[in-house]
Image (tube, rainbow, N blue to C red; front, side, top):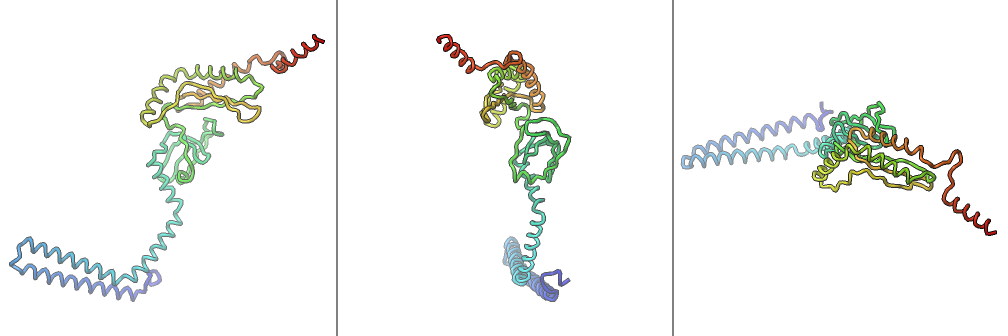
Length: 303
C-alpha cells in the first residue's frame, strides 16, 4: 500500500494521530469556552449566541489552518501526483474532450440541426443524427453540385467543427437561392444560350416566386440582412480562354433543388441543341470570315 501512496504509511499514521489530537484539543477548548460564556449571567441571550457562534467559527478556522500546516508537505506531494494524473488523463482523452467541446460549440452557435444539409472538410450530406460526440450524415454526391444520395452514411466526430469551417446549405429553411452552372465554348451562340436559359428559369420558377419573396423578406427582418432579389438572373464568367460559363441563380424550395435544376436544364437543352448554328454539315461562317470574303470580292471586281 505504501507504494500506492505518495508518502510512507508511518508518516500517514503519525500525521493522522497529530490531526486527531489537534481536533480533540479544539473540541475541548470549544466546550470550555462555550460553558464559560453560558455561565455569564450578565450577558443577554443574543450576546451569548453571538459569542458562541464566534468561538465556534474561530476554532474551526484555527483547526483548518493547523491541519493545513501539518499536512502541507504531504499535500504538496499528493497535489503534484494529482496534477500528473490530470495531465495524463487530458492527453489520453484529448480527442474525446474536443468532441465534447465541438458539441457545445454546435449547440451554442445553432450551427445545424437534424434535416439540415451541411458540408464540412469536403464531406457533404443531410444531418440525420447528432449527439455529444458525433454527427451522422447521409452523404450527398458525387461532387459539390450533385443533390443525390450516394447511399452511404458518414459519422463525423464533433471535433471537426473546431478545425474546419462549416457550410449550411439550408440556413433559410423554407427557400434558398441556388446557382446552376452551364459551361459553353466561345464557338457556341452564348447570347442565344443566355436567353433560353433565363427563359427556362423564369418559367420553372414562376410558381415559387411569390412565396420565396415572402420568406426572404422574413429572413431579412430576422437576421438584419439585405437579402438579394429572388428573380432568376444569368451572369457570365470567363474561367479560361475559349470557355464561357453561364451562371443562373434561382429561388427554389430548400428540400429539392435538384428537381428544379433538372427541369430547367432539360428545357434549356431541348431548345438550345437545335439552335440554328450550322447549315447542313458545313459550319456557318463567322462574321470575320464573311467580312474577309466581301473584301476579296470587292478587290476582284475592281481589278
